[in-house]
Length: 71
Image (cartoon, rainbow, N blue to C red):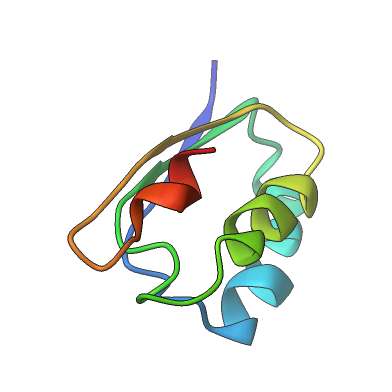
C-alpha cells in the first residue's frame, strides 16, 4: 500500500491543484492529511480537497482548522 502524507496545506488553491496530480503521478492508494487544512477558512475547502482525488483520505484537524471541518 502506498500512502501520500501531506500537512499544512492551509486552504491554498495549490493544495487542490497539486493533490490530484500527486495522487495520479505517485499512484498512491490513500492520502493522509495531518492538520491545518483550511487556515481558519470555510469548511467546504476540506470537502473540496477530499473530493479532488479519487482515493480514500484520512484527515486530522490542526490548530488552524475550525471544528466544522471535521464534518
